[in-house]
Length: 532
Image 1: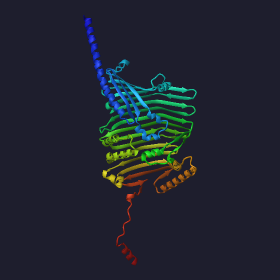
Image 2: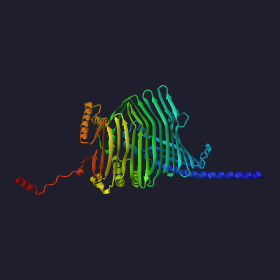
Image 3: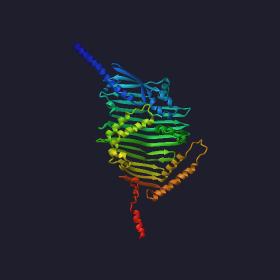
Image 4: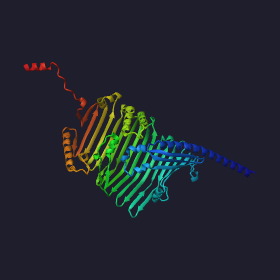
């Protein structure tokens, strides 16, 4: 009798657990659909893509979501003339993927994963047989990409992306490729209002014995983003790269269509003579210990942002540059205005809009919404800039700010300019300045290689050097610059409408006094003086 009673209790307990699991799975499936629908809306709102098709088939214990995207040609249309011809066919392609969703409360139970969650989502990308065959050459039997998204009960989740490593070599062509993999982890809160990101790419090497090589290692990106009281996203983000190396053995031709870019920005037709063209000679380039960091914080209703960029060494053939440090800050930015400006700009329709019309809409929006950014004493600071070059060292510190600006000052150019406060201290090698001037002169006088008459670039360079020498000599005589052992330095201070360069006051247009108008008695006084 007792064993039978125990069997009934065990059966009832098991039945209860099955019912609970079934009910929980159904509830988790509904909540998972809500979360994935929210994520799909975010994807559909991206301007780069258009949703060609989307379906969601929800079951009791599992579901399937299929999405097909295509590139938004109305967005890229005005700019397609600038793209390489072999890239344009890719704009007609589609991206199709399927989410396989296992409902909670223990969606990974079949894999002995006992972590509770709303759902576990794995993503499968649709590929042609030819694509799969090509990828199998590199990855073998491993999936070329694995995407899993664990949906938490609170509406957030954890997204993981993995691309496995591979070694590939072609003995006949001498091509070697070594990919050390890629990992991405995104830990996000409900609505993606807060998220932490960590991405790692340990390294990549591509060698072609007859062409050259490209390699990088130690690429890492981390971020921690959260919303502030004003609604502006705050936090930190940092990118580091250990080493980058690029070597090429053949000359690489280039032609940049600057005239098309000028037309897009200004709607002005400019001849092709401004388009730089030529070739990159065989070279070796390397970059070591690159780092970029940005930190945003909030004080009351104002946003402070600080960015740092530095590298240990940059080599171009036998020319070595570095170390380099750049540290800049944008302080006292009015948070509510930044938020309004971001929302206003995001609401401007841009698909199929003429670039000139779109540019005017952006400018009008900034004028209408962004004025409080200027009237709340914003300040841009160059805390530190240092670069060591073959010709010497360059340093720069300075700041640019607005103090006490009123909206009425925007209608008076003199009053507006007097609200600026500027400080700068600069030091750079004379040789560096000479190289910049000579390069600019070469660009100014350069003509197409097919032209019958070619300028004598040696004469152009000599003329540029001569003009620079004359100008620097004049500035030294006037005490606007100092020169010591080939190093040129100066400083600038502008405040309250007064400008001083190297501690020497410089007259500005509004400070010039007009000659007094002669009075009616002046001629008579002059005549009386002559009579005496």
